[in-house]
Amino acid sequence: MFFDKLRAGAQGTTSKIILGAIILSFALAGVGSYVTRPVKEVAAVVNGDEIAAQTLENAYRNERARLESQLGEQFSQLLADPAYVAQIRRSVLEQLVEQQLIDQKIAELGLRASDDQVRNAIRALPEFQVDGQFDNDRYLQLLGRNNLNPEQLRDSIRQDLNRQMLLNAVVGSAFSLQSEAGWLDRLNHQQRSASLVKLPLALFEARAEVSDADARAWHEAHPERFQRPEQVKLNYVLLAANTVSADDIDEQAIADYYAANQASYTQPEQRRVAHIMVSKGEGAEQRIQAIAERLAAGEEFAELAKTESDDTFTGEDGGELDWMEAGTLDPAFDAAAFALTAEGEVSGVVESEFGLHLIKLLEVRPAQTKPLEDVRDTIAERLAADQAADDFYHREQRLAELAFEFPDSLDMAADELGLTVHSTDFVSANELPAALNDARVVSKAFSLELREQRMNSELIELGDNQAAVIRVLDYRPAATRDFDDVRAEARELALKDKAAELAQQAADELMQLWARGDIADWLTERELSVTELADVTRESAQDPALLNALFAMPAPAEQPSLRTVPLSGGDLAVLRLNAVITPESPSDQLALIRQGQSRVQGQRDYQSLINALKAAADIEYRQLESEDDSFF
Image (cartoon, rainbow, N blue to C red; front, side):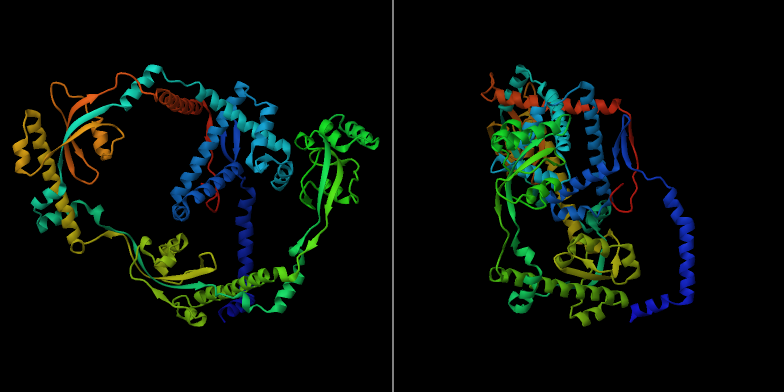
C-alpha cells in the first residue's frame, strides 16, 4: 500500500541523511530565533497599566461564545471572514481599555463598595441560590470547581460594584428640564392633517417605452446589478454513521460493561456535616481552640456555630452544610469530614484554604449500587451508540486514506465504502447543496489550493458523525454576466428606471400646479385622486416613509408646504401639509418622558466621560502574534 512504501522509504540510508540535514539546519536557524525572540504578553498599556494578552484572549473567547449563542450557524459563516474576526477582537480590546480607564478613575476618586454591599451582592447571585435562597454548599462547591477562593470572588464583586457606583453617579446626575420634557411631550402628541396624491409606479411603467438599446445601455451603466459570484463545480462524497439498534447488542456485552463500569451505577457515600469556621489571621488558632474547649465542656455545637463561626452564611443554620460526596470540597475539609466514624462525632481543628474548622458529623448515607436490570436498557443504548461511533471512525479514517492515495478521483473511495459520488453544476457559496451548507466546506471549496490542483480535499468533519470529501472539477471567477444572459432582467430594470423618471416628472409638475391652486383637471386627466389624511399622529398606521416626511415638513404659512415622498413600495407621492395641531399643555406621560430623557442624557454623559478619559490617556496598543485567530 501507499503508506507502507512511504514508511519503507523513510528507513533508507539516503532518507536518513536528508532528514538529519533538515533537523540540523532547523536547529541552527529556526530554533534559535524561537528561543531568542521575546514573547509578547501585553495587549495594551493604559497610563502605564498593562492589559495582559491572556486577559484579552479570555474576553475574546467569552465574546465569541456570546455571539455564537446569539447568531447560531450564521456566526460560523461570519468567522470565515478574517476582517470580521479582527473587528471582534479590536472591539473587545477597546472595551478592556475603557474598563481600565474607568478603574483608574475610580481609584483616583477613592470610590469603594462596603463589605456589606459586597456580601449582599454575593448572596443575591443566582448561581449561588437554590429555590431562591442563598446556599452556602453550592457557593463553596462552585468556588472550588472554578479554582477561586472567597477573597478572589470578593475582590471581583467589589470591583464590579465600584464601577456601578461610578456609572450611577454619572447617569444619576443627569436631568431633563420640565420645559424640555414638556416640549418633547407636546411634539410627540402633535397631530397633522394633509392631502396626498399617490403616483403608482405601475401607471408609468405602462406608459414607458424601453428599446433593446436602452436595456443594453442600462446594463453597461449598472454592471454591479448583474454580478455573478465566483462558482465551482464539485464532486463530493458524504459519510454518515450507520444506525445500530440497542436490541442487537449481546446480553453478555451488556453484563461485561456493567461489571467494568459498576462505579458509574453506584451512588457514593454521602455525608451531612456542620462546621464552625474561624478566618485565618492573628489569634485564629487561640479562638478555634477556645471553641473546641467549650464544645468539650458540653456547649451545643449549633449554638456555638451561630455565635462564633465566621461563616455567617451557615452559622445562622447551626453551621449545617448540605449533603456532600467525597472530593467535592476543599481537600483538607473533605478528608476530615469523611474520617469521622460516628454520627455526632466532632473533628479536631482542620485547616483549609478558607480558614480553621471544627466539623461535626450529622448523618451518613451509605453507598448504593443500582441492579443490572434497572440500567440494562441504558447500557444497551450506550453500547449501540459506541458501536456506531467506532464503525464511523474506522470508515472515516479509511475515507481519508483513500482520498489521499487516489487524489484525482473519488470513485475508489466510493466503491470500497459503498458511497455515492455526487456532482453539482456551477454553484456559488450560497447555492451549495444542503448537505454541504457548512462554513468549513465553503472555505475548502473556494480555496486557491483546490481550485488550482483539482485534487481531493482532506476529510472535512461536519459534526454529528458526518464527514465529507470534495473535489473541485472547475472554477469560474466572479464576473459581470453578459447582456444576452440577462436581457430580460436588464430590460425590466431599465423599464422601472424609466417609469421612475416619468413619475418624478409628474410629481414635479403636480407640485408646481398645487402651489398655484387647483389640480382637479390634472388629476382627472391621469385618473388620479386626492386622499385626505386627518389628525395623523406619529403612531398612526401609515407608511413609515410617509410619516417621517409628514412630521418633517414645515407648517404652512404664506406658501403651501409641499413635498415629494418616495414610498416604501417604490411608488411616489406628493404630500401637501394643511394643518398642524400642537397640544397647549403636556399629557399625563410627561413624567415618563422626563425620566427617559434623563436616562438618555446620562448615557451620553457617561460616554462623554469615557471619551474624555481616552483623550487624556496615554494608550499604547501592541500587535499580538499567533498562528491561529487567537490574536490579530
